[in-house]
Image 1 (cartoon, rainbow, N blue to C red):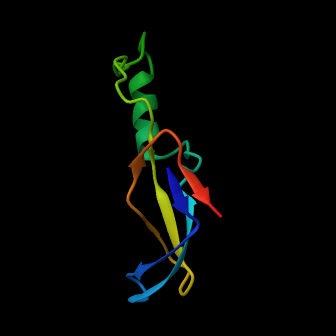
Image 2: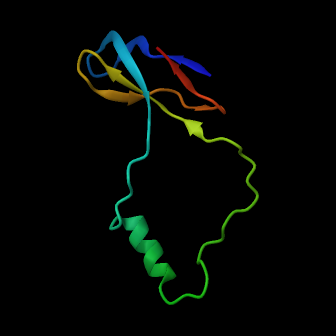
Image 3: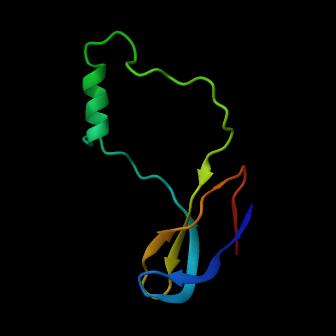
Length: 92
């Protein structure tokens, strides 16, 4: 899928239509002390195998791509509609 690098769209923070630059959302590095990680480590302690079942019937072949829009006026970021496509390309 081809997506434009800049889009003119409504910014809920400025409450006006502004030019937005598009980038793809990337997950940050997970902290080792967050609550979910602590819970899983506690559940795994003193246990023979993995405590949660591992899902093997993978039906989905591609992940959702989440475009992020940055307002040129205020610099705030918001998400656009996500797409489940094999190739997500941002045009210059």
